Image 1 (cartoon, rainbow, N blue to C red):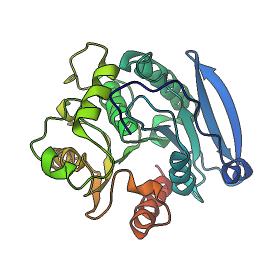
Image 2 (cartoon, rainbow, N blue to C red):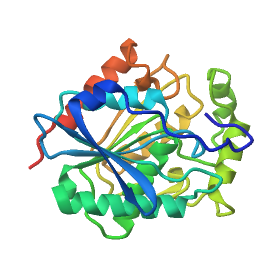
Image 3 (cartoon, rainbow, N blue to C red):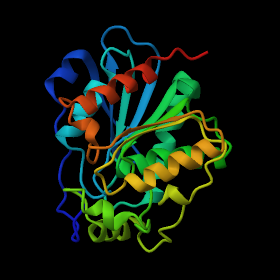
Image 4 (cartoon, rainbow, N blue to C red):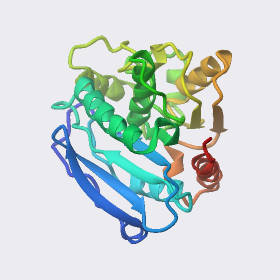
Length: 273
C-alpha cells in the first residue's frame, strides 16, 4: 500500500510458526541487509525461489506475504530466500539491485541458475522482472522462470485505463503510487526499465508467469506485459481472475487464490533438465 508521506521505519512481520516448523530458518547479512532463507527440513529438491516482497518500495514485508509464500512453496521441496532490501526514502533501486545480484550470484553458484525462480508481488514483482532484465543485459545466466503477482511495472502510472480501474480497486490510488515511485526513484528517470519494467525490452527473457486480478489498478499494465511477452514467444503464462483484487493470492482462503497457488506449486515442482 502506498501513501504520500514516507512511513516511519518498521520491522518485517515475524516468521509464522508453520514456516518455522517445516523449514530450517537462517538469517544472514548481505551488503548490510538481512536475508532470510527457508530450507525444507525434509524433501528438499535443490530448487530455489528468490522472492522480493511488495509494499510500494516503502513498507516492509507483512503477514499476508508470509501467507502467500507459505502456501506457494508447500509440498514443493523449494528452498525460499527473501532479501529484505532497504526501503524508500533511504533505500533506492541501485542498492536493491546490487543486493539482489549478490544473492542471485550465490544461489547460481550453489544450485545453478536453472534451479532458480525469481518471484515477487506488487513492487517486489517489479524488482523480480527487473532482475531478469538486468541479468539478461549483463550476460548472466538466466533463472529458470519468473513468477509475478500483481506486479507494479510503471512508476509513472501512465496507462490510459487507470481511471476506470481505480474505480474498481478499493486499495490502490494513482497519485499515491506516483508519490511512492518518486521516493523510490530518487530523481532518476522513472521510465528507466529497472524502475519501470513496462518500458523494458522483453525479448530473450526466461518464462514469465503473471498472476493478476481484474479489480486492481495495476491490471492493465500486467495484461500489456503479458501481450508483449506473447508477441516475442516467451514461454510464460497469464492467469487472470477478473473479480480478484491486488495481490489476491495472499488471500489464501479464497477460491481464486487457491487456483493460482495450485498453479504456482506446479511451476515450482517441475523437474529441471
